[in-house]
Length: 238
Image (cartoon, rainbow, N blue to C red; front, side, top):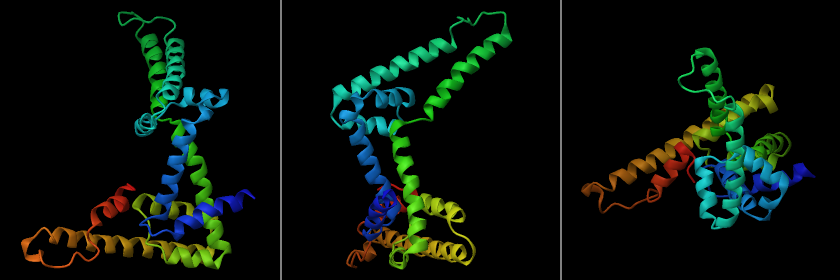
């Protein structure tokens, strides 16, 4: 049943007119994750424990703020700060001072708190929630490619992928496919990526030409939105 549920957003994304179906899937996951975080769930003890422990990356904290649930965000950040203070105090409980004659001990204590803060900078509740489901979507893509001809045709007709998600599919393929099927998939994936990157590059080139007076009377062709489409192809900005 779960696998069938995961096929719905995957098929929907590949039915869209988009430069990268995976970007569309991830964007929807991100929107849902933000709504979930700022919805009633933030009052649940297990969710609050996770948000307190993991915190948020800069990008998603800004999106949470824009959600307008300021009280909910304040409560979440309050318990997150409580967690940070508790952990920093735990790592520095011995009260080591800069003037301490024990150089190795001071370095050890500093490494502990710095290590904790470095790890904290790498975690985000929203990112984790997105990634957990997105990984299942990747597995579903390969499952559908392996079992359904209709999906393989949909895949072939896509406009390719952004660089980041091209890399994801290329790297994950050997985990799910093998032999001639793997070779065929990688060739198709590579062709889709390069052909559509070149297509967008040509649109971008024509967009640039349109700023030259010599092309002022020429039609825009498909170049009017070439810049945002190029940003999606290169940096997954949707």
